[in-house]
Length: 498
Image 1 (cartoon, rainbow, N blue to C red):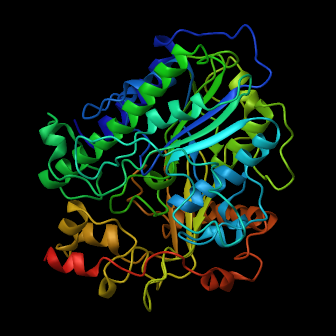
Image 2: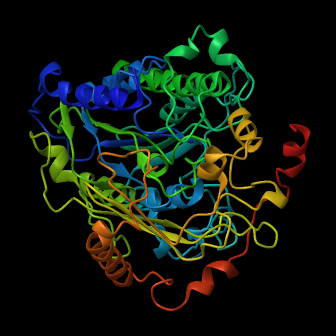
């Protein structure tokens, strides 16, 4: 089976859900639901068994999709951990978040976050695993992680190295045991998986077959890369096992249907040309939502959902009015609808972008970029094409997680090296409905001059309306933001693998 065939099978699987899953129409709505966000760290869209992918099994995610709503077009506005999570918490696009636009910076104190708002309204709030981060939330005077009070007491022995010792599901049970009687809860369950590092060979030892993995066209045909992806799959399945335990616990206490359960990830998988890059596989996110008491299940929805839409949706579901600072738009109407496919025709556009990744060294600051995504097109504008998008080769390709795939491609000075680590042109244009791998740049084809211009003008108009400093003549601000993380970089590791 070739790459285009697996994409077709994924599409067919999604469409098939409409016939396969029973339509569960809600009969009674609870006034204030529990709100549970289950968020993976670096998990890509399409990497679940509900999409008929043969090298991974995710029965818990599949169940949420089957009994709830599977969203085929959910996006983060910035495909890096801390900016993406900040967008979820604040209901704002990342260029509206001052310092939080950059990875590993501070969390500005002036932006209200939905867990605090729900807590003030009487909710019992907490988180386990990875909340907002990496970065520094204390600088502005915050007393706790923006995701809420921490519940990380319980540990376990994981089956493979690289998997966190945090027992997420047990910590959720601990959180529930401390909840005052009668209070609804708001919980953030953030796993550290499938973030690298992985135990090399764990996927094969788990019984997975490398031959089942179909590689995207920006990778060479290599068994090593397939095995690396299987190691990643093991950690996605670990995430799913905790989700399964959480669903079971909610059933045991009789609160499954009155809990608004959102299952997603912060950005794409930690592989070259994916995580942190402005291509489809980086910012297109898995999203399934179950709310048995209110939301009719067994549906597949095409409407574009922005991560900044989550916070206002949570607040509206709780009967609260989102604050003016939240620029996202609630999609509670979609959750309550009994329809599939396109429900709200106005939800057909997405903006995405990033600025600097880490502090780096000279000429290693990452590339500032903005993009607009429609159902057919992805237009990308690189504002500093002389900057390295994945890191300066002389300082170790910092903006790409270390792993076998990275080091394998770094040894090759061919088209795959260029696709994964080379500098980007000033403009990129992809017919993303036909080329989701984003390898055929049409930006300099004369046939698409008008489309490119229209998309660029629309994107920049919307960014100006949203107050993006880069559009308002203050792009230099982003390069002045203090970097709060470690100054260590990957160059020594890279040298060891030569």
